[in-house]
View 1: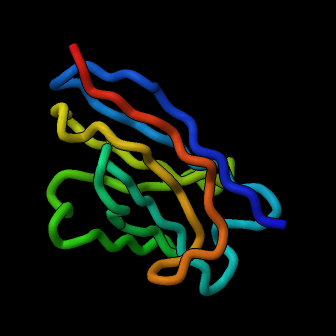
View 2 (view 1 turned 135 degrees about the vertical axis):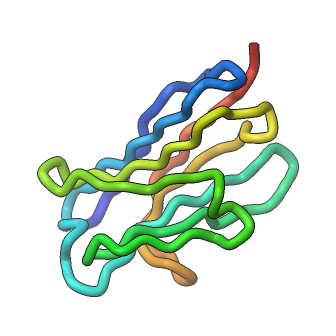
Amino acid sequence: QVQLQESGPGLVKPSQTLSLTCTVSGGSITTNYYYWSWIRQPPGKGLEWIGYIAYSGSIYYSPSLKSRFSISRDTSKNQFTLQLTSVTPEVTAVYYCARGTTMLDYWGQGTQVTVSS
């Protein structure tokens, strides 16, 4: 059973850098043909897909968010990360990691990120 767990700061000040980590257990992030995504849900809005990192290490971002987010991974820890610099209050959301791209079969429980001074 694949499990994903997000971790990161719950509260970030404006202009700071946000870093979130997704730890995967029950499967390797380098296993062929699996993709690992980040998704967010701002308050009162729907889910918004941010991007993925593939088993190969290739990365793809949503065109509308490409310039803002950065995805990377640490294969030794079986983790992948999401980073965003110079955050603004509009970044406030619940952030999820999941396996897949358009079809997401395993999800983390989500982590609340609030940007506030």
